[in-house]
Image (cartoon, rainbow, N blue to C red):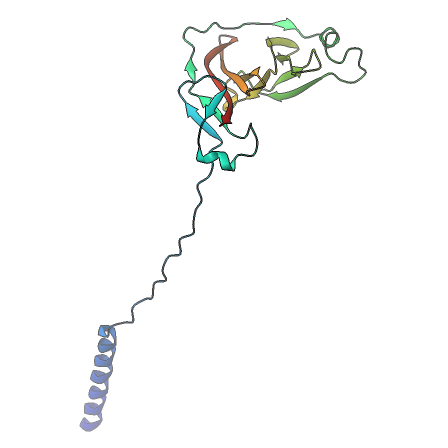
Length: 211
């Protein structure tokens, strides 16, 4: 009986020692594959932001020129300029569709002569109707207006003028073409104030010319 117990103790000791020896044995190091770095070609910026500039904007001896295929591919944009003491525009006149269409292009047309979209411009969580319409055949549209509850609450006329949506319905962005030969455009940001709209900053942009 004593002999069997002695043999059992030896077996347990040998097994325990083998376990701990196995833990202390140096494990093979994990092979880390070398990171393969892909060649990343620099992207060509589509806009350059410059504090101020004159249009046309010309860049000479530039590396970008070999990538540019069209004259209006890259645009230069000015830093926004704050409008101090901007005047609040308030308007509230009836929108009469028939009267409105009398002066539109083409005259005496049987088709609808204007287009519209709907989005919130005065932060009331309700969409207003934003209209663009032409009064001549070229350099359109010429009329941009906002209609709320059947009344015109904002209207501007100009060459290539249009109203764009901004995030959150807090006003809108008015765009106007200045010179289509150079791609010069003017942007004006409006926000709703006291039942009207106040301009708060302007910005200009034009195409980059290459020499």
